[in-house]
Image 1 (spheres, rainbow, N blue to C red):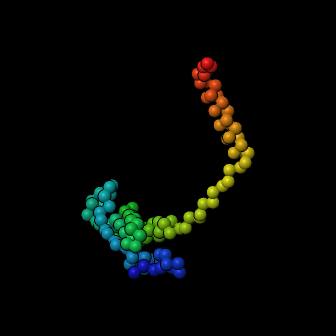
Image 2: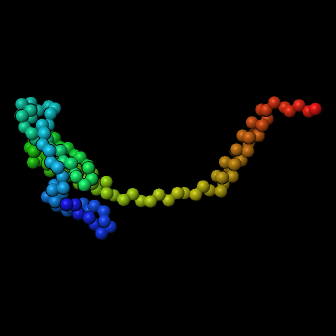
Image 3: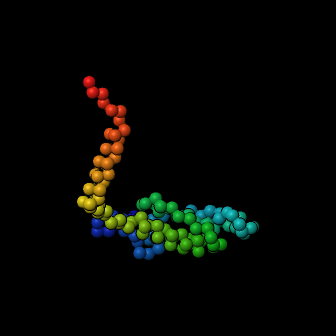
Length: 123
């Protein structure tokens, strides 16, 4: 059902029809403000993308067809974000000057703590 690219990963379909076939489409009442018309019309659309489990909802428009188009645009944007490869993080090296500074601070702190100890009795 879903398309895969050369690497075996999911590939985002070009057409809305193919993308819509990969989704479960639910229609529901939009709720909220809008009065009598909104209370009896199932104009809100919820798309559940079955391969990835991403869910988007559109309920702003009075038309179910317009809400479906808005939901498809949102789904496409969410899928692009989901499928985007994040670049591998390259850890940065701690400069030698910083290492020396950190070790010197530790030495100073240790010396202060040693001076706080009770003096040893000679005897």
